[in-house]
Amino acid sequence: MFRPGWKLSLFVALLLPALLSLGFWQLDRALQKQTVMDRREARRSLPPVALAMLKGSEQPAFRRVRLRGHYLPAQQILRDNQIVDGRFGYEVITPLRQPDGVVVLVSRGWLAASLNRSELPQIPTPEGPQLLTGEVYVPLGEAFTLGDTALAEGWPKRVQWLDVSQFNDLFSGPVFPYVVRLEDGAPSAFTRHWQAVNVLPAKHTGYAVQWFSMAVVLAGLYLAAGFGLMGAHKRRENEVQK
Image (cartoon, rainbow, N blue to C red; front, side):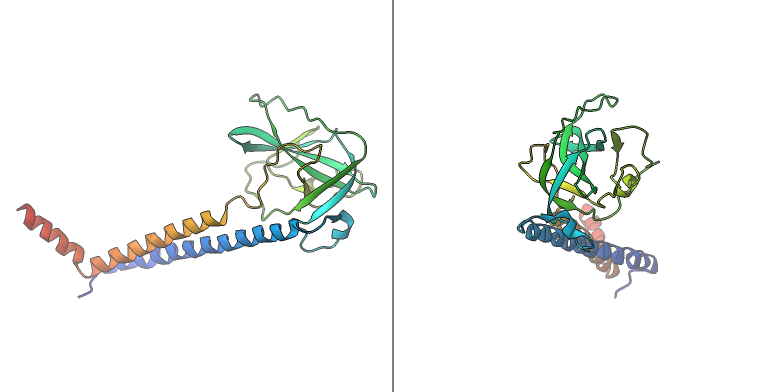
């Protein structure tokens, strides 16, 4: 006879769907991340285009673009808490003004920081006309932040999360709505530390396997309890001990 009891049945009825839901959610996340990585690889094989050609594009992510203009070295942006090989540093983002007046926030890569938080790094920035190639970075979603995200006075601006819209009124002229990450070989680039996704698809798949395994174990224990197999096993152990 299958008699698991109503309390155990209620517990399993609530927990089992949750475990399965988490497993399928991780599989969906793995598919999303793989789609992003495939899109990036496909677009990196395309020749770069002028930034103006992306105007009105609904899918500018990972498009390779050409930039012409002058850096604005007095208005640097430092994205905080970037770790590379166990070392603390910043992602350096330098505005570049194009001949048409559009300001582009150019991510030049990672630069090591001092252990003294009050000391900001020196950021060497080339002068004169620049001809750069990079790829457009479109965030997958909004970052979770704590506290006030308002920009402090003065430059450089040190931020936890880069919201390009916050800089629309800080430059004379329009600001391109996405960051452009420099490609390899640019003389003004620092250490490249970017990834297409922060968690690889294989890791999400591994999480899914863990959730599904927990669901299988829970179902097995429920069936064993319902058919009295666990109680019978305990009785046999007691008899052996006697």
